[in-house]
Amino acid sequence: MEDQDYETIIESCGGGMWTDDVFPPKNSSICPAQDWDESKYGAYEWVRATKIPCLTDDEGDLQVFVDDVSPNDIKQGALGDCYFLSSLSVIAEKGERIKKIF
Image 1 (tube, rainbow, N blue to C red):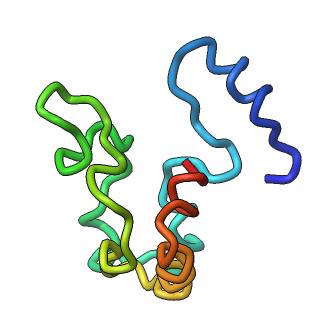
Image 2 (cartoon, helix red, strand yellow):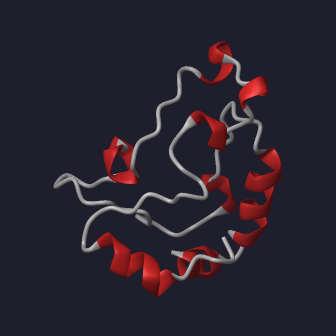
């Protein structure tokens, strides 16, 4: 990621959607191939945030922040990423920190 430059990324999109070549939307970004467990991860599908109904408003526009940010907003699923989510929870103690990231 250190080789990625925000301005270069924006320019390369040409107004379209960008796909991160360091963290692409494929199974190997979730876990190494030898650890892939279809019964555990097979139900998940890579989608853009705009395709997640609970993140969009009635017009289909992305709404990342609807109310204030809270550590209670973080819900752990089945991916085993509690170490990451706990970090987000600490940052979310001050909601403006999360909003600055976006």
